Length: 567
Image 1 (cartoon, one colour):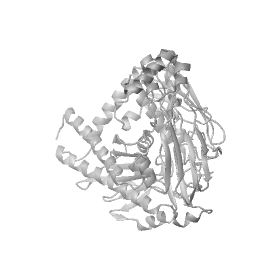
Image 2 (tube, helix red, strand yellow):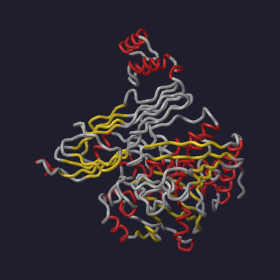
Image 3 (cartoon, one colour):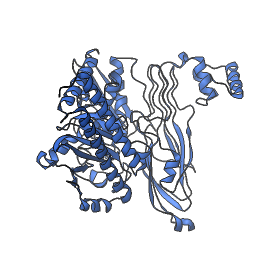
């Protein structure tokens, strides 16, 4: 049956809906709070060659854009002659998956009328994979946890029980991990069912024509956007904390007629600890940065990503190869967009935001019975991972978003969900006034957090923070965001990264970083300053020092507070 372009457009939209339902099924069925509450996942549909046709809106760029390359690896490793109906494949290979061992990627071949028509893939971050646990302390990939090469989880419908026994015997949360694996398998199956329903409805027997339509239109639209840009090159760089010494990210952006090249030559070499980033993850966030800058409304697929070429020398912090430790590859990967924006702003100004908090403000708490407490007989061991965010950078025409993850898009976990996961107590979680950089557009606010444990527990605190020594830089005259701080409640200073022991009864007190400002603070409107003061986003001192608010203006704000008014 011959279809019109309108019909193919409808089918394309349907495919996007299919993978979104696939992703939502994973959210509903996953065991890990990182998936259910934070949305740290991805889902997509692929053609028979392993080229991504559509991705779910729910998910992170690091997972989706990295997973875009993964299915081709599965096809090559499994072998086209060994792909059968009822198969399910699995891996957590950092270099053929999505960057570290804590991401499980599942791929399921989709058959229609006994013929292979495509693949469904999904990825989720799991709380534990054994080894040293989720953190930067390992010196090689071998210490970071259980490695699952690309293999069959199910062969023609039969689950590999030996594999499950190996998995259960090597992780701290076996029920949770195995539950997540089956949730991943199930969401792919739901995608397959919806795809076959669509194929029946439109009377098609394969995805060849719709794939051609998607790829042709996506490639053309992306190249048209690139062609409209100045044919220039510019370099940008960024310095962040690293583990024991600062890390420099350098990138040269070169805009050509039909592609954009991002060359990371000059970036720091490999780190001894697990913050190194495989190229697939660097590529994911470099492509994302350019996509949001020039073509945010063009759906992600193999063709819309193809015009972005990413180059990085082997054994640099942004192209770590086996056996480099990569557990916290997101630390580096989440700063890649800021480096790219710093270069792109020199070519096309007034488009990209100021620097933000960058990486997620994650921490994992490994709780156990305290050795010095009579209450420890009722204590239990537990692993609790929580995702949190600092502020995003201000945009040319808008303030930065407070406590919002950019570029990852991962959601902040509710306190209730975190405390339900184990005997942890979140004593404080609120916005951090004055943490957003000043400017015509203000940077987004970070957060305050205090965490402890129920009586009778001690714990290891695995810190995964940055921006302690290198806060976000403003753009076009905007001010810097506030840095990260971390300490125990007795004043003991803590490191921004690494596993640290917290004795029974102690709390960890954190202040997460703010995003930087955009433009000169003197150009911010008086009403916006008054509104920020009224809502508690800035203090009277900041309002006076940076924005010139006088006593009469402050009195007006205080009166508005008394009357319940706003600006």
